[in-house]
Image 1 (cartoon, helix red, strand yellow):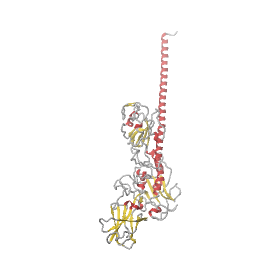
Image 2 (cartoon, one colour; image 1 turned 45 degrees about the vertical axis):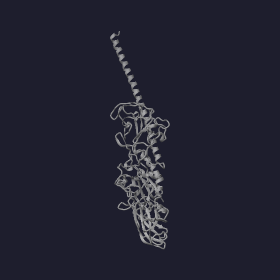
Image 3 (spheres, one colour; image 1 turned 135 degrees about the vertical axis):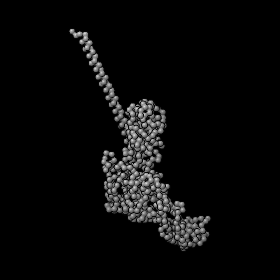
Image 4 (spheres, helix red, strand yellow; image 1 turned 120 degrees about the horizontal axis):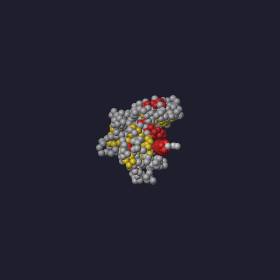
Length: 574
């Protein structure tokens, strides 16, 4: 017979066992709930990653597609975010709003980019941040441009951010976070503190400091970054295409036989400017071509519409003195070509404001003359002729109060092997001195405005076709090589395939290139730019004149010696 005490002990043991079983079941349930909760969180994070990646890829593709379009003046510029006034407006939401003051925070412009509306795992539309210097008017975007967003403490980290905001919650105060009770609004414009947290929610005027992570419990933004390294290869490919379509044809019209007076049918190209730090800023290359220089920078010197200064060494507007580049002179005596009068005094030439005026004197009754004016360094830059800027006239040498009479004249130009241009001005008959009521003598004048040999449209930042190239300063990233036979050194210009034309590996026809450009792209060796070292711009043999078109390889995992992003563009081939 079991005692009462034993029965009580057995009951206590049974209760204890039941308690253990209950605790185990509770642990199992809680563990399952935690696991399911963690699984759900991981699933939401994965979903957000997929959506953010899709938005990022679409954004980069959109920027490249815009950059390659003819007429796009700011190739590489990012779209602005959606306007705050379009918040939750079914007709307009997702449309980029221009202009925008940078840095700019707003909803992702999915409609402008050509996407369906993208939402995160909680059904919230994506948000978007654009760096200073990467959208709107006034941007200068090229391979040396920096992303100006500071992200997770790293300066110049990104050009843009795309953010999945997650669910609304009550944000507790934490280091770097201000307490805020998020409330989803239906009223425009939105207060983005109701969607983003901590450094991402500097409202209403954003700074350029953002986070991809924050204090636990105070931050639920999921952020994807777009860096220069990620977006620039697509932009550079578009730029190379536009250089081929728009810049190369223009270069082939700079020095042509018909305009510049040399034999043959093939164009001549300007001498290169020796490679030096391409800038921007003081102490950079002046972009002046030099006789006998065939490798270097495009001779992108500017002679009009700029102000000479240490900060703009490309500008060379002086017509006299030590800084003058295009120097005007009269190398030979004037020649009488017709008329029964005679030249009494050879013309003397001097600058009158922006016009080079050569004035001589003739005797009764009338004569016709030719006057030759030389301009140095015409083939050392990208020049354009406007012979309508050269006029002829005559006037009584007594001067005061007697009006000048226009005289018809024609001008021909001949490029010289030293790179100078010779302008020969041939006048028609001068006015009869007696019939004009003048005295015994009269003056003849040849007036050549400075703009008669001006800057080519390639230098004009406002040109509708090519202005983007100068405006975004792609010339600073563009190397130039020309066969000696296609400069002023050889008239008429020519080179022989396989002998003295340029050779570029992996380019056909082989050994037949008259001139090429190489778009250097972003730095592959990590060196700071601008730099006077060519190897900081070009890779492989391109930095030493052994030109090659290789497969582009930019990944940081590739050894530095093997990285390559030069893009070769042929200007002309035999």
